[in-house]
Image (cartoon, rainbow over all chains, first blue to last red; front, side, top):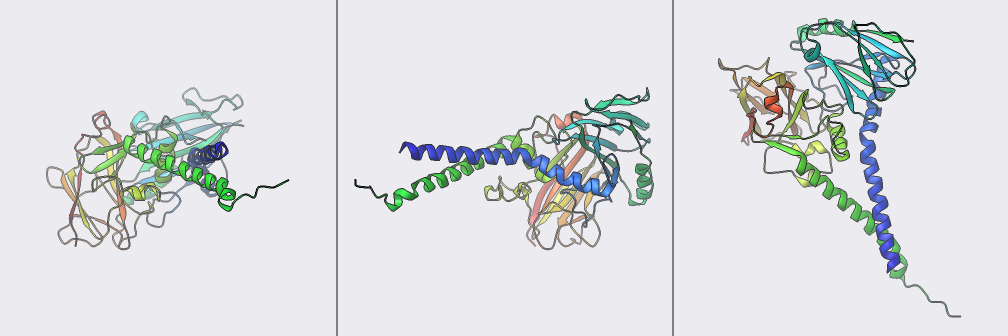
Length: 176
Length: 214
């Protein structure tokens, strides 16, 4: 009898542990799939992957917003800090910065910067020392790797070429 | 020395106990998921529901897993509020384990209408239609969403969006539903003013309703 109860408790515990572990890992697993797409599309880390404006053919990730043009970047600042220069854009844009466990750790965008260009330096505690411009925002990432998700609002499809050119004019420098 | 022979049911008892344990664990997980869905759902009387903790690093692991499945990299609620349309009395528990977004599926055989005013205090907002797998739906007008800046409104900013698989004759704003299956509707409010995200369950959002079966 005792042995049976012990078996029941153990099997319940082990299964619960596996379920909890799977749920804990789910966001990172799904993020891994996204980062793979991004790295393949960009040709490596610390480079932007320029997505098309989502339509019915888009299946890279669920619930895409068809009004936002995305540029994604997988960063790795363990060996080099990154200087990023965003040009001014007089409409809604936002750069969401996400660390390796999918938590958002910082934002820059129209809400904070209005119609001004933005310089930012991204680094982690493992980044080698660097010299950054005085006017650059300094943002410390909680992990060496993570993602930028830059979104630009497209109000009219006729504006698409201009917004596409704007997002491709974002400058990236590795501060080695 | 006599050797006691184990009877067949006795032999299988450990396996039965293990199977019962696994079943019990899934039962506990199901209860936790239902509790989580209930306790964190914030229902707006206009027919939209959101989950407290979307985009927050303080969200519990169940919420994080669910949000990652539906909308990985969701913004925090001061940047974006995400809602799903919910018509009916409650969550369909049979659908809980298939896909979190299946909780809020609408029928493509019905006609829905969204009525409201474009003046939601936010940078901008949108209503987007997705299929049951959370992807955009092919349609003859390439219309996937409406936003506050592309809706046809009256002089006071009031609008009506018709959501149906076939375009209703009188529709000024038609959001095409899929011909071949259920769908869901999402409302996103970008950079919402504090008066919305502090009053999520009471703020008068565009009202979503079922018109009739065709």
